[in-house]
Amino acid sequence: MKSLLEIRRELHKIPEVGFKEEKTQKYLLTIIEKLWKPYIQIDVWRTGIIVTINGSNPQLKIGWRTDIDGLPVSENTGLAYSSEHQGFMHACGHDFHMTIALGLVQAFSENQPENTVIIYFQPAEEGPGGAKPMLEWLQRERLDLVPDTIFALHIAPEYPVGTIATRPGMLFANTSELFIDLKGVGGHAAYPHNTRDMTVAAANLMIQLQTIVSRNINPLDSAVVTIGKMTSGTVQNIIAEDARLEGTIRTMSAESMKLIKKRIEALCRATEIAYECKVSIDYGSSYYQVENDEHCAYDLLRFAEQFPGVVAYECPPAMTGEDFGFFLKDLPGAMFWTGANTPYGLHHSAIQPDEELVNVNIQFVEQFLRSFTVYK
Ligand SMILES: CC(=O)N[C@@H](CCC[C@H](N)C(=O)O)C(=O)O
Image (cartoon, rainbow, N blue to C red; front, side, top):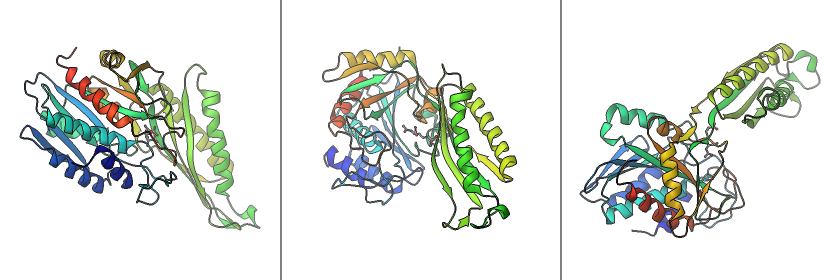
């Protein structure tokens, strides 16, 4: 088999967005098939893969989940093995997550675990969300592949390699995508009075949306309303008939999410009146918060405390979202951050996580999963 470093770099070259991970799936399958043993079963779900390593004396089915999709980001790392898919990049570390999962398949194929370990290569984490439909399919059609407990990791640029950071309870926020379309009347730039200018309407709405967190959310709560993309108009001397705002909402509770949506709807109605236009809202996909099981999170932290080369850290929650939250809604388990030591944040075009993290995490996770002989 190729080295895991080589595999990570090859995966880095072929990022694909949610449910379009065909090349990635094919690539992963070629590696996984080489690791096949009579006690290993390989299943495919859409662009995802499920690898079951049947245990020698199974008391439990322990799940490990990795996400496999990339992002629509133009890479700016200058690396020799940069993305070959123009405009797309593994800017959230899923190439690392997949390599660690492959390293686990390799470790368990070389040395059969006592318990059954099921490794889920899950599509579409960045959107529209693969965890929920994958789990629904498992629960409906393949109960044999539903684990008793499940774990996952996510790289954390800000921590040194070897840091394992998690907490009991909420680790990541509730999320909802947000798409707002404005429709007015376009026309000649010199005749604004005959038009309903959607560039001006969208700009005002965008600023007003920023008052929701500062004016409507309790200052002791936390929430985010981010507009990541704003589009309007065609050329400099035509007044725009349409505009579109694209963003995301993050909250610590379902109640705050409801409140924010209510305020967005009110501001959109007010924009319709103020700018004599039509405004429509689409919330896209939404993710349930990542709620770690208390025992599982503390087991992870305690295991990390005594694992050589690893530093355990009980960290605060973050406003990132993760559809792994849907697995943890139904199953006990936990997610953790693992240090990636890079100055650029997640989703940045220049992010370059430290490749040292691959081996540290394979060893740590392999031993952690093997240590789960009895579910506590
Ligand atoms: C870990 C991470 O960065 N996850 C994404 C999840 C995105 C969910 C959805 N597409 C949205 O934007 O709301 C994140 O942006 O936190």
